Image (cartoon, rainbow, N blue to C red; front, side):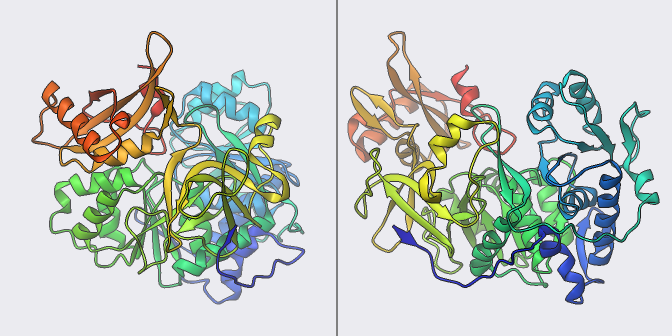
Length: 524
């Protein structure tokens, strides 16, 4: 068992996360400081707190009570923030969903979350409206923004209700053990699973993170992923606002063009990024000569950050990059890089307020240097999946341990290295092979820009490793290249680990989270 550094925190019996994250800025004299930049608009902490109170009062008028859920399905905006904080302030439970799903996906969310109120905007109204017609659960729909079609029964224009709402709102007397929010886990290999979290959980999550990054009131934090990803919501909204930092919002889906636009316009000191976008930034013509000296730190999360990408990004932009690896279940990072002490390719070290252990399939801890299944324990972790009893038992174990089902090993210096998923191992000719090991090997070949390795069943039902490969410009997809890559792997690894087949692609399919869509590849 390994514990992170010891730090002392105090969690009061009565706590409301909106007060903790947002309202305390007013008592600290930050009312006139800019809290949010969104396109050409600026919002001070006074303005954000007032809007939060107004939306909180609107939700109360719509009879949202203690631990009743509000579902946010709208683009990143100040209304997103105020809807989130207003929900928790009145004792409700904040939940959220992607903004580019199909009506059938939203029907799942409506029936699964069972929200009292859904907050949408013109970009999502029609799809949510269609989903609501097929939902077995009745709810009210608040529509933020302007330019939407005529509203139907049970739908309300948020802007009009805000005009009538008081900007004064006392926080509900929530205790540390009241529900505050949901994180969502999965969704790339099945339906998303909700992980409820308490008001209590937000405090150790913030303090563990803050120990390493030290957000300050002078920071401007820009998240590339959207707020419906809990990585962006926490590191890009909740935690910077708690520290008095300003946050940058971009309503539309992030593109490499919009990322550079926001960087040059707002000059953020903290960039929350994902490896897929980091690679796209390097390939953009704007990258040449781009001055990002105002960025003091780039934080990467969401998928593995390769050694090669780390080196290319830091060399191209002169920006330090740190890894953050956590999960919806734990609500915090269980591995985090310490700025100035990064080992390229490693996942990082164990941060404060976190315990981890690496175990074999029988639950016995493995020796240092050996690969094991990661179990995590912290005071921020959830304790169950909503409506998923059997999956809960496999993930949330006794004594507050969470089984991540990820494979890691610890090196002699206390750094942890990701070795894949325990359920991703492929049995080839009677021997288990790690797809990630093959991917890491292929990525060191100069021709390979991006790759993913999957187990594909043949006509006899036997799994064979297939590498899906995107080549750098200047390299030709051919049988000769296939043989070169296979031989390269045989020289770098045990020969049986070389991929049995290689398929070249122009681009790898991605999920809404920017991760490689393995399910799509398997269904080809």
